[in-house]
Image (tube, rainbow, N blue to C red):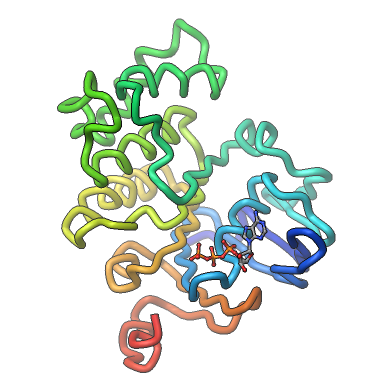
Length: 238
Ligand SMILES: Nc1ncnc2c1ncn2[C@@H]1O[C@H](COP(=O)(O)OP(=O)(O)OP(=O)(O)O)[C@@H](O)[C@H]1O
């Protein structure tokens, strides 16, 4: 693993309606690293991902991308810099077919017409299962298939960094590995950086390089997946 950081947050302050959620929160995601973020409901995990992607305004603190300070992080700029956010929830439009959702993804990511089919082929090579239900409406798909569409759509931009918010919600462990196994393989091949928020700790540890634990807006622990899975107390807590 390289020592340089891809994405770094220093002393972030973020809140809603004057109520702070993150207060002086710092975290760093290295190049070529899968960092697993865990914590109880309401700890501020989704807020952190949104702040890193520029979806919620910062009341203080700094975000650095490959060492460069980003003055006012915004989703367009973050997307252009190679970051993709896959928010919590399936993130698909139930009435649209997968093909239509991908077409919307081309538009949202500004992928020129001439590159679209190659880009789609590439996404299908990473997540070949999508081919099976490509012409189906997303609302008719299983939870795991919908998550796969959501990930596939995020991959259209060929990101260097993925921010994944609870991709396993509602999925059996086997389905979770079907979903994130190919992403881990891609990450290793392309040396991507991934920050993954997960409640399904046991499964998430299998694909992570490092783990951090958040509680009430603060970072309370950090360790390797091995140290974590050997700690029964922590495994019982999360
Ligand atoms: N848009 C919002 N407006 C007001 N309060 C919010 C908003 N989003 C989140 N919060 C509050 O901020 C706190 C942190 O929420 P956040 O979703 O970041 O936590 P989380 O760790 O991701 O939890 P979960 O596992 O439930 O998704 C919670 O108290 C939540 O109620």
